[in-house]
Length: 282
Image 1 (cartoon, rainbow, N blue to C red):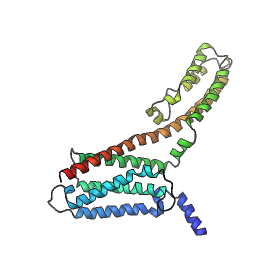
Image 2 (cartoon, one colour):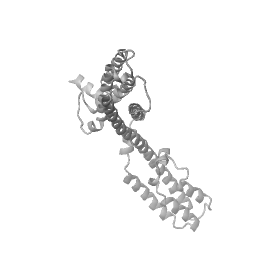
Image 3 (spheres, one colour):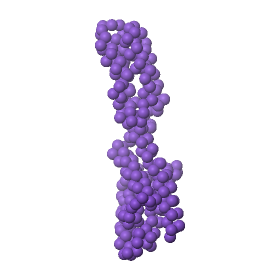
Image 4 (cartoon, rainbow, N blue to C red):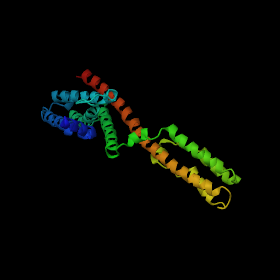
């Protein structure tokens, strides 16, 4: 029982890429080898590669892989342990997705042009490429996406800002009109209204809070409330930096989904069109 428990503990902490001692990497390697053998069986001089019987075999295999790979989103809703655990499914998704590049490319016989088949091939590369981006993010930045969604919700971040904003307003009561205006501008600027590119940058070179700090430091440091307000605004800047980093992490995930998912849908549409046209002209 002890050894069984140890194996379960090891599997729990094992990377999805190394699932079951690289089982799916080995399976993907076998697919690539078999595909290469199929390519070697191409009858010489029989025209476009896809129209040969090895071409139809590899094309069917590639289409089956594409459909199966798109089922990961459905599979994520069913949490099951064991051989077909979600970790195992993700591992298969990654490695077989890479093998798909070889299968689809050899199916085309590198005969590409301005047609729906080449469009499907290009979309497949885009989907696999964005998938690689997602894998690198998960593998090299452990817990990044988990922290981005679990560390703080938008409501919690807003509550933290409201608390310190209330303290700043109370401390800013003795300030003169110009200083009070700089503080008011800083407090009324909505950090959550930043666009996608600003969120991806993770910083704001035109931060109103930092501008307010610079403006207040230009005033008489002995004026009532100046030192206290500057100290609070410095704390607010630190909180804003934390919020921006969380927003940046979420934006990285958002960019991936904005490209990967629509590209997958477009790939399925192009694949269907390719299959219909292939059988129509068969």
